[in-house]
Each structure stands twice: as C-alpha cells, then as structure tokens.
Amino acid sequence: MTPAHENPAIVSESGLARPTDHTSLNPEATVEEIFGLCDEAKTHRFASACIKPAYVPLCSKPLCGIEVNVCAVIGFPFGGTSSVAKAQETAQVIRDSAQEVDLLVNRGMPASGERE
Image 1: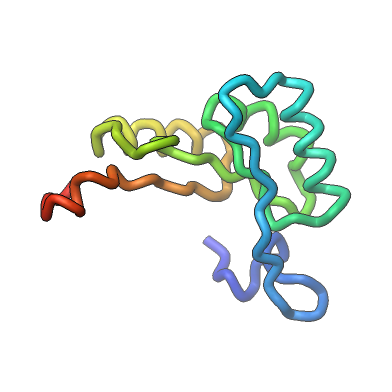
Image 2: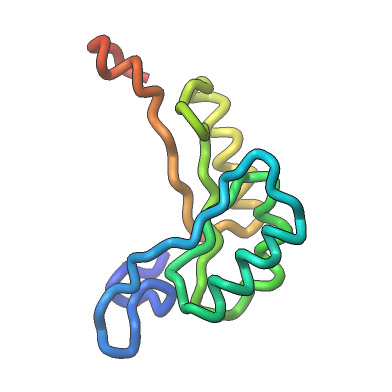
C-alpha cells in the first residue's frame, strides 16, 4: 500500500492533501446519479468518491487510473451490523476495487462500555 504522503489520489501537485470526499449515500440514488457523482469527483478533483458497497464495481471503471479513489462506506448508516459482516463486506469491496474503506462503528456499543 502506498503511504498517504506519496499517494497522488490524496496529495495535490502543491504537496497539500486533497482531503475532501464527494459522497452519495442516498438510499434512493440511481445508477445515473452515481455516475454523475463520479464525473463531479473527476471534474473537481475530489480525493475520493464515497459510495455504498453495491456501487463500487460501477465506480471502479470510470475512476480507474485517475486521481480519485473509490471509497466504500461499510455499516452505513448506524454501524449496527456485526464485526463479521463488516469484515466480509470489506473483503468484498476490496475485491471490487475500492481503494478506501470507511467503517462505521456501532455507536451504542462504545457508549455502553462494550467492544464491537
């Protein structure tokens, strides 16, 4: 894996990080809207396009070879799935060519003093 400071997807030509992600986690987002998100991410040089896991294969093609990562959000919206399910979902999005994974923690467990 490339260290963050050497990754052209998150470091601009000036050497400063491009930290802004372009995100669509709308449960009703259409394929056309997701392709539009990818186009906007390319046009505006966002660091990544953050999407639901099911859309990773769709975004991997239009974003392949450019400086915008595909980021899958695991456990959205509340992190309520089990750790085993999150691990399986993470493995799948990596196979589907996601370069980044945002993992949501089950918010109630730490608040209760429990570990996920």
